[in-house]
Image (cartoon, rainbow, N blue to C red; front, side, top):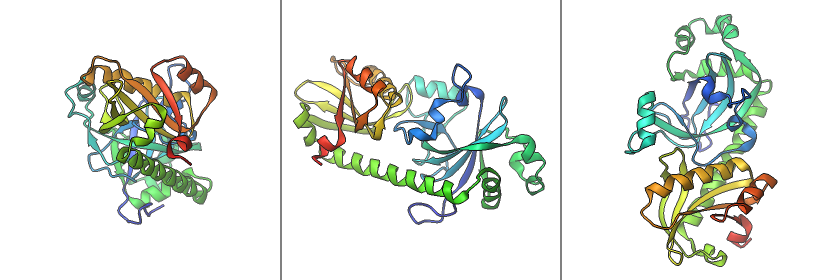
Amino acid sequence: MAGRSDGRESRRYWVWVTGPKYYLDDDGAERRGLDPGQGYVPGGWWTCHRETEEGDLVLLYRSQLKKDLAYLIETRSAAYSILDECSSLGEATAELGWDYGCDYEVIEKFTKPLTLGEMRSDPALQDWGVLRANFRRRVHEIAPDIWNHLLDRLAVDRRKVDRKRQTAAKRYALERDIEDRLAADLRPFRRHGYNLELRERQHICRRGGRADIVAFDIDAKRYVIIELKRGLVSRDAVAQLLSYRASTVDELPNRRRPIGLLVGDRLDNEAQGMVDDDQRLAFIALDDLLGR
């Protein structure tokens, strides 16, 4: 797993350390947002090191209750400042000591996480500074030899895990290609009743996350927040768009409340119900939009 999907050999490896608030849901179950089955969720971010680049690989260490390495993550953007915005997001992250974030995708949840006790009893890790420091900081870089050893301890089949990573990277690249195409030419939306002008891409929302496309409907005189999702669109994607839409009410200068527009392959039943129940939500099938 040394090479990058873009052919360069400059991939870096990290450990992100996080507490129960971020790896468990309110009911104590493992956080649904870390389920690798949901793919890349546009706009989701995690605090990271300022030198993080798109395509870096990460192991997530769960502190306190779990004390283990349980997830493999690939970054979907380089680090960006989350303190630049004069907003509640910037204020909240500053209080927590967070300064940089990056987009990410969970590739694998390991069937048997590697516990702190197992790492401490491993002779190959005795001199690993991160372990000796007891994972105190939020982010640690990992040397390639330590990374490979940890993956050998974690993954039953390294080749299978790498195939998952490559598949996810290709899917992500396809989503970005489609986003580029739509942002460059919004005319296909006219067939669905939207006469749009592009205003911004990857808009950082004050309530967290980044909206794929912010456009303005010239005829309706209102903003349209567009989110792209390949595959089956779930309730989580709808909830994300609702958060973006609510955030932009105070961020974008317009009297009419913005609408949210999902673009994807198809909606699951829960997502369909959420869209049907909200007059300011709509869904357009990607094949219909691109005329395929």
